[in-house]
Length: 336
Image 1 (tube, helix red, strand yellow):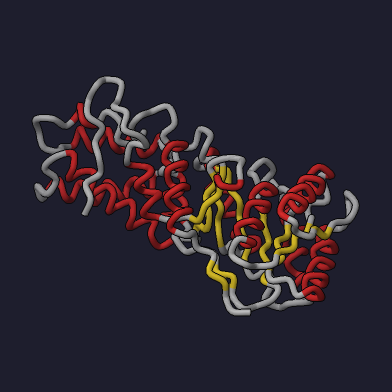
Image 2 (spheres, rainbow, N blue to C red):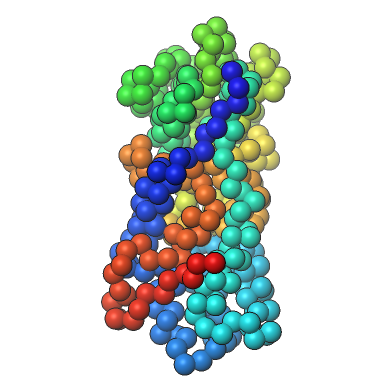
């Protein structure tokens, strides 16, 4: 079978980005980043005070010091050259700067011609790994791919049951053993089964690891070694699931998992919580690892392919036509 295109359709993009914008900016008629900036700007050009306020908002929005410094360095240069005349000019420049950071990471998952294509899903407890697997399985099915799941989280019986529920819901076979079984053996058996059945994609769950628990990280390395006995190139994707609400701690997790396994893709989940989405910029600036998907809720439709341009739009633009509480006009990002 030829390589499969797993990018979102135009209709899917339109629906998902509306939910993303609403979730990131929930409780506001305006963007959390640009909210009330209009009151700071009228009657004068963009100056150091405005940029200092913007810097504070970026830092508190989990954008991180490195990405914030990169953004502000560019904006301060434009201010020095008298290139930013008003709020519209600031928003346009901010959009371009943020997109410069994020665009290189917007690389949708490509399921190539290798069969089965093995995706190893990793992350700490509570990050939304198992739910992400269920949504990913459905996403791939909708693109005509036959999927199998491996219940490699054998330390938590509920994880096996949860994955089996997702399997039943999506009509996807699940290879599982009893709680406490060797995770590497489970994934190995699943790969053998996927090969025998001609399955396109095998998605393997793993037990949630704290990135500080070296002995548990070693078990993940063992899973990788064991499946390479059957396929030297496997896993073809190491997908790290991160809770976007963790802020800068997500950077520490990424560093540890990347060192242990070589992370090839990231899923940012729980953008419907307290997360403002800025951590995507921090991740992109620090690691440059592709961000494959983002999640904004529990439903299957709350899972979408990461699109850098639309993500920046969601950060900067109001999610509805409501005006800010103070009555000021909600600033709109000028179209280029």
